[in-house]
Every structure is written in structure tokens, then in C-alpha cells.
Length: 87
Image (cartoon, rainbow, N blue to C red; front, side):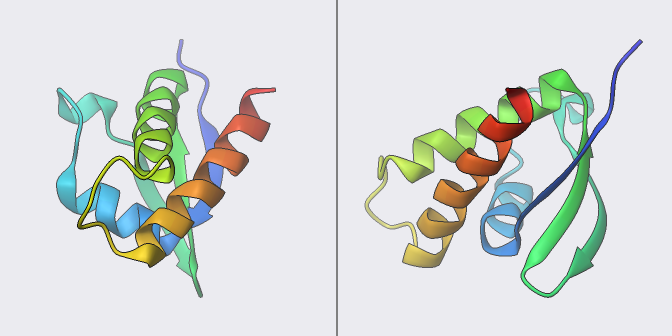
């Protein structure tokens, strides 16, 4: 049984993540269930949240040269929010 979590993350980061879809299979992709202002609500099981956190950490650490600042800032905030959910 998969325990689903509802996560609220910055839209700038989510939109980039969703467009790139950096997962190995569709089952590993969190599902967007809502959007309000600059926040996106997604549902993710433990595996999906782990993919999201790993990707957000990569971008938050500045491992790319051509990523817009807004995406990096959103990734940093996503890391904070996702790490807090895991605690």
C-alpha cells in the first residue's frame, strides 16, 4: 500500500520538473492536483517524493549553467518543504 502525501511546492520549480519529466517510468511522477497563485499542490507517494526531492536538490545546488534563477529559487524552497515532510 502506498501512502500518498499532499505537497505544496513552488510553481516555477514544478513547471520545470513536469516539463522535463525526469523519472524512469510514469508511475514515478507525482500528480498535480491543484494550483493557486505561485504554488502547486501535488500528490506523491514515497518514491515519487524521493524523485522530486533528489531533482530539487540537484537544481538547488546550482549544478546547471542555464537554469533560470526562478527555477533555482523554487528548487531551493521545494527542498526545504520536501525535507520537512520527510522529518
